[in-house]
Length: 267
Ligand SMILES: Nc1nc2c(ncn2[C@@H]2O[C@H](COP(=O)(O)OP(=O)(O)OP(=O)(O)O)[C@@H](O)[C@H]2O)c(=O)[nH]1
Image: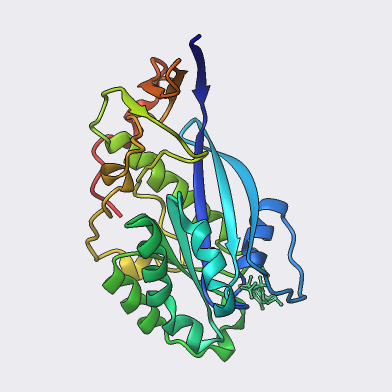
């Protein structure tokens, strides 16, 4: 018997970085709208989600909060799998957390390959006690060719922008996918669509980045068996032999598809 259903766009985002940089706080702020001063170290992995609308598409962001303490590395690594986007977070007042960014990037890429990432300097409200110079952070972002945001989870500054950027980027990857062929999977996870976009530069960083040229990171979809479609809406058919057949949905983006055209090579 054939069963058809339309799948929403879901993105698994992993938030990584040293302990106490504010990963749990960031996810809580974004998904629950709250901030607490207490530090409760994350043991293993936690998970929250939020739905947003981007370019008339409903996007479900599944945010995975991973422990920053090295002792949990073995556990958390397993949870990187299937992620399509990643937040690399460090704290304004913790030098080690800044220096660890590249190693966090590697840890994630070792598990999932190249995915959309963003560097986030949190606790910008503590700028008077900063132990990282603005130019250093910008140079790192430039070197790694990643978008850079400064946030204060405490003051609710730029948190929305970080996740919206990742969602837009993901959507744009979908729109840039040239693959329109139906794809047959033998199994799927809950997250399997990628996208890309030029997003919106946050106000703090716009000037420092205006003159840099970034190329789009390779989409994971290209070397993943999980292929998205141009608009990301997929029709799933469960076949008798246990395979799942994916076809682009006839419904495009509510007649607003043109928004992403020509934006495929922008960070
Ligand atoms: N001043 C300030 N404090 C913050 C901010 N974000 C988080 N904090 C505080 O930093 C501490 C650590 O935050 P968490 O969110 O628990 O840090 P984490 O990165 O999840 O830590 P692990 O679970 O150990 O990986 C808490 O006391 C938070 O209240 C911020 O933007 N500004």
